[in-house]
Length: 74
Image (cartoon, rainbow, N blue to C red):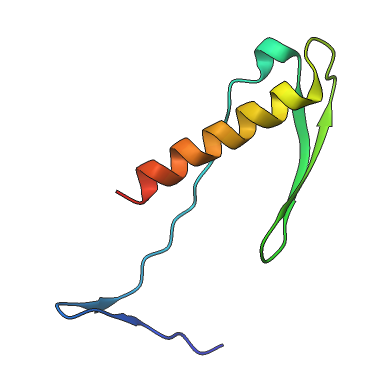
């Protein structure tokens, strides 16, 4: 596998990040059982979703991911 370095006007290098997103979904009784990523989408399998509508859980996950994206882009 060929590694291609990113070139900027003042540096050359590569940055890799391992980010763990842990939205506070325990309040809804939700547990993330499995997650897989495609090139432009995410598959998530949730279990024990008893206390809230699925729309609320999805809203929490999307809100948290927007928050993390904003932090990582600054």
